[in-house]
Image (cartoon, rainbow, N blue to C red; front, side):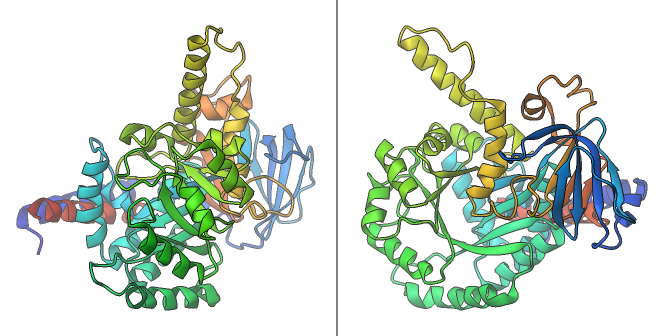
Length: 483
């Protein structure tokens, strides 16, 4: 039961947001592409393709047909009936790939502003995540998908600890579908109480997951699984969980190797390899403090790694591992991690990671009596690769997305190059990475569908979604305060 005081606050917030949403002008963009088969031609943009063979085009066109990039060239004739998007003064690039986010925490946005890892776990995980109803997960995932799209992210890997039941999982899938984003949903395994039978408790989830894998997933959603893993549990039960999930034949994601994990195990990756669990279907997250030879071992087995630089540095996980993992040959992605603390898509994460790595390199050089490198050894282009083509590889999706390559699905961003934060453009990679904001991302296509144009989301119900999110977030916060 909601208190009268909270109810008044929630209703007031809902009414206020709904009123604002209602006053926004109706967007003709929502009707600009009524037929998904209608070709789209982006004309005259500065194209950063992230395709080594294709390269960059200072002025180029991109043709999209039936959701697929058909051609990228200096000039393309518009097919009959095509929707032409003016790319003049715009930078075109692939949509970004968020390799690790707890998307349902969009409902707890800002509650971890002052949290340490312990405070986050006690507050968000134990007092919010495990109290979310299926309807909450559906709403939060839809809102989170819209936020990510607004920030230029077209693919997310949702490490969903909130999918505690098949009903929660179905709701997450519905929310992702309603948000219109490309997504990997990592279905969690329910926690096993002391003395509980893991096989029985996980059985319902496993049966449901098999049904989803067998054909019940929307076109843009694929299924992984996730679990606490060996750095949170005794080794043998954790390995048993991983073996059980491996039966599904989909990737498994675990958090590993952070300095703050109380049960962190020395040489864990070598132990996983000895158990036959280090393979191309494993994603390790954070993973800041494995031994150098373990990153090379993981690379040789095809293991994926995702780094979330800002949260890792704030909470004490350690220096972001993406650079040493990539140098070892691992498939690497970058993620935002917890919306309860940070938001804004991937550009802030890339900036934090770049600053952290250059700071490390500079201190090392100064300590060794050398001068600071005249040219930074990590480039803006390399950082944007981590968010696009490398991020797609880091999720096994590089044949689908991550570059503006003909034949891939049309996940495309158009960023303003003539805006107060970006003009004049001397280096387009630097302009995107170090100057642009989410507000400069004017147009976003996901799978060939326009999801944002002229700086506004095209979802007609976006205002109502965020109004409902505000009201429900206040209700949950009040319930958490009451215990």
